[in-house]
Length: 125
Image 1 (tube, rainbow, N blue to C red):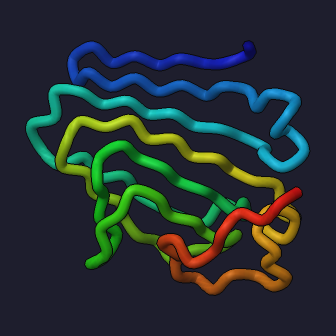
Image 2 (cartoon, rainbow, N blue to C red):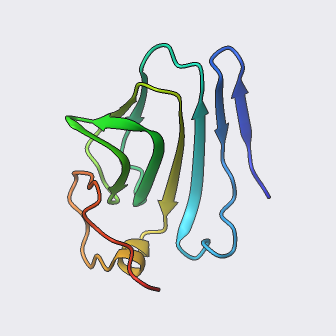
């Protein structure tokens, strides 16, 4: 597996960029995994548009604006926002190829600039 690992021992932060395996590489362009333990202050992750639809999972309930959840789907563009996590967590972000939302979720148009929290269900492919 081709990946880059960054470990900051002072902050108990581990960042991994695994290469998507062949089974998902048709739809997934990049993957990001962040693991944080020993959290004493809120972890605030900036969210910004990168031109890729993104599915974000995290093991601890996170907050975007006033919504708390464990999973969020973003379109190709999103207004700058932050995700706040208050407990130790593992976060996994799947950055999709531009056409993947149609193939996986049946979304035939661009999503608006607001993230969705469970609005779409994975369709059979």
